[in-house]
Image (cartoon, rainbow, N blue to C red; front, side):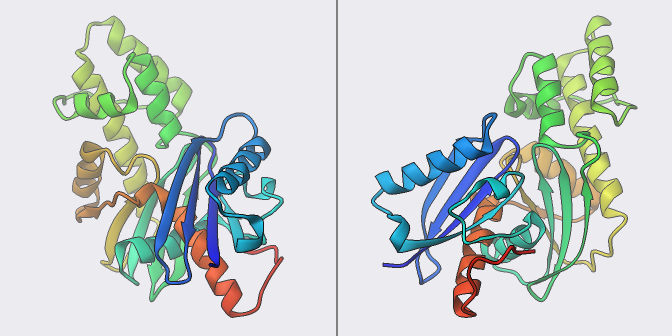
Length: 266
C-alpha cells in the first residue's frame, strides 16, 4: 500500500496525518513539539515505523513552523497553502475563509475555487494567538479550556492592550482588585476575537463560509464569540486541528500525480 504522510510541526504541537490512495485518513498523530523540531521529526518517523509504516511505503510533505526540520520529507510547503487545501477537504467546500489560531501566529486565509486567493498573518506579536490564551490562563491558574468555560459566564470587562506582556499586567491588576475570574476570562477571549475581527477587515471575504482551524477549534465559547464578532457562523470540525497536516498529505498526492519530488515547495 502507498501512504501519503502530512507532517505539520507547529510551535507548540506537531500533527501528523496518514492517508491512503483513496484519500481516507488512516491515522492522526499528535505530540508536543518540545524545544527541538528536529527531535520531534525523528520521533514522528519512529512512531510511523512502530505502526508498521516503513519509509519505503510513504512519501511525506512537511509544513508548519518546523517544516525545515524534517529531513525525510520529500517537500516543504507553507502553512498557508496546506491550511487552505486541508480546510477544503475537511469542510468539503471550495470557497471558504480559514481562521487558523496557532501557537505563535494567527492566519486568515481566503480560498476561492479550492485555491488560496489572499491571506493576512499576525506574526509580529503573540497577541490573539494560542500562546496569548495560554499565558492568560496560567495567570489565572486555569487551563485554556477552563478559561473559555469561565468566559462564557463573564462579561463587562475589557483588556485594552494588544501586547501579551502588557495584557498580562492588566490581568494581574484585575485579579488584584478582586475582579471575578469569569469576567477576566471573558476579557481575554474578547481580546482574541477583536484581534481576529481586525485582521479579517483587511481581506475581502466574499461572504464565503468561515471555518476555524488550529488547537483552539475545540473551544465552543471561543468559536461562538468569533461567530458573533465576524457576523457569520464559524464552522468547526474534530479534524480542525489537523487541517495543516491534511493539506500536507494532499500535497503529497498532488506532487505524485505530477511526478514531482524533492521540490522546496511554496
